[in-house]
Length: 496
RNA sequence: GGUACCAUGGCCGAGUGGUUAGGCAGCGGUCUGCAAAACCGCGUACAGCAGUCCGAAUCUGCUUGGUACCUCCA
Image (cartoon, rainbow, N blue to C red; front, side):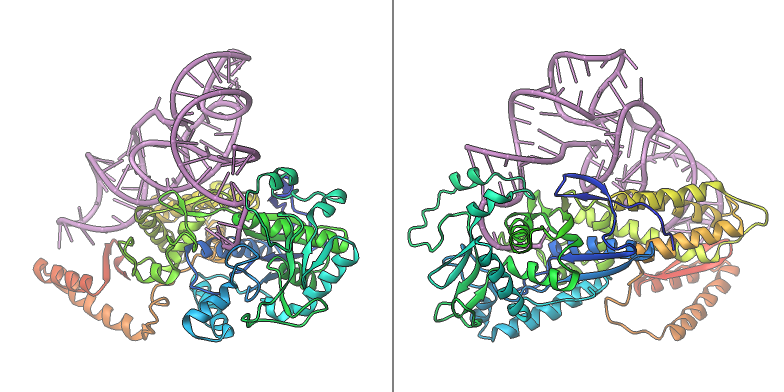
């Protein structure tokens, strides 16, 4: 373990990098906004999935105990404006003629499946909004008691203007309330809200609404922002370390969440707010509402008109890690293909490092520096692209040693191996997932034996200078996806 | 309209007041029966204009272009 290392995190609240200091020494409480499960996970979902996964892995590697909470939104997320919008889950259920909970179950399982393929750690707790109605009602009561919400026609709304007198609505997103109100053009004629900036804490259900619960105010359902306030406090405490999510959630979702926390208990609840940037496609944000998204399944199978080929989950993971999480990342076939090749080289080195020859008495100082650079990059607000650039230096060292162009000692080798095992595989979660994704469970022992037998034939042919035969064997294997490399020490092969 | 953010070599993408990011592609070479892989060498990039500075791609201003949020979105 590499304890006592300082980690810097960019805090959206202060708009700068801050040294991470856990509220409880040695422990990290992390809450991340999960998906609304009414459709397949797309490439955009992979970004927070992987970003916060690396964060969790890094903390754990550095010796912290992490409680990672990521919710499933299965109720309360409305399609449109709060007054007329349909619940996203209910809408999908109606369209597919299923129970809302069938929709939730289907897409939750599919989300889990995609996240697993991307080699992300499952959250410690994965709470659902619908399972925490009681907690949400309690918060509404608290806010009403504080005089920062009002009841209107069976619904309860957060009184943003009143709240703003005492606190600051807009601290997180950098907005000014007056501007927001004056800039809202919509005329809410029959609106139950006092002000356009107010948001729903509890909504009275219309007769056709299926997902409904009793409350002191009406039979209804909770507002979207409430679930995260309720569940984060329940599992991480009134004040916890890190809250993560996509930048698009900063406003209104996180702003409202912060306001709810503050209104109910006097503090915003979160010490560090982290926001990952968006993935774009042709320079435009990829999103469900824009209809320009690629689902992860489509990506893994290549089944989408803009995809030139299938991309493995690990390629996607590598692609995402090659950009910093706070930058936008533009999707293109070219970029994915570049990532695929880079990944292959990295994984080959991770394999080769284990069998490097060591030379007694040699000590390469460079490797120690390299390791240091990798760690400081990761600890500097999760700078995975820089970490990867140093890891590619490590790849080069591995290859040079393999080629006999560089000598390393036993300690050097251990350090290199640790770098690949602990960082590449461990923290970055980059592993060789070939075959796993396809679901083919080959009996590797038999396969190895058969291929080696064929290769022995070829070696014999080569010894007899029967190039036609040896090339034919190589070509035939190539067709089957077995790539051969002739090296000084014999023949190596990999499955493409 | 309001508020942010961004503009880097063929592509992706870091970073920074003065030393090569890195990956992919390309070119030349080494190795090899050939191939593949690997290794070595090669690109003198930072939207435009003006300013600050001994020195700016990095700071300031303006211009242009783009994106995001202000409805739901990871």
